[in-house]
Length: 89
Image (cartoon, rainbow, N blue to C red; front, top):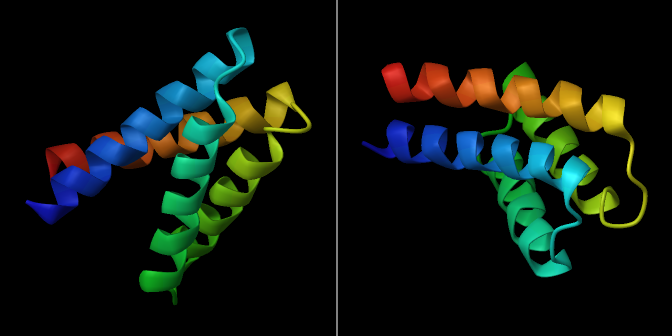
């Protein structure tokens, strides 16, 4: 159950990160999801996926100031596939 909730949050983060490329989102939304990924990286530390979650969290927080479409798209695809795998597990 918890894996599916985390997968749903990853999928939602990926769609918001992609949407942020088209429409500037509120800083509160980006702060919420960036903090979520940083906290998840700290709680589940010790593997590559946690490191990538931490980097994704930092990218979401930095995207409030500087928008890099290629990095946003790459991490959005990563979070989307990770969320889908978690949802189907």
